[in-house]
Image (cartoon, rainbow, N blue to C red; front, side, top):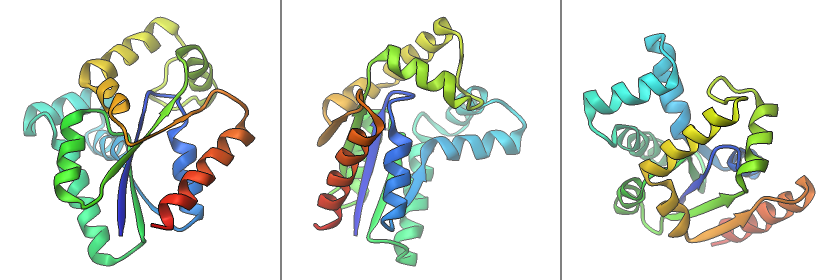
Length: 180
């Protein structure tokens, strides 16, 4: 059983790693989905819910909920590879490493201009088409510690070329990690 995490700034290409991993039999646990699910229950936007969850239960409640969900999946023996998507702080990495043997982080990198263009096309509810809002979101992510997670990751894939080349990099990584 391998548990690993994916990190990267919004629009970097984390989701494609997850999609391709699922095609190979992996199970995905998205930290962002945990927040989005809770926001829907509370009838709030994701930023408000993320802040309130942390105020109510502590700064790393989403990571703690993620650990519980991953442990449940391990108990159910759903897959040989479980991927945690959306890791943003060094504390989260430490929490996952203390709960899962051989835990590794894969970070995806793309420059801000390219990421902004991708987010405008993606049109997810928490994506902005305003560049100033995009920069504020980046700053919030960096303030939370995502830069340290990316800098200290075990593997890094750069996603600044065409989709086919990026897909090949992902496949190579997944084939390698799933053969361990």
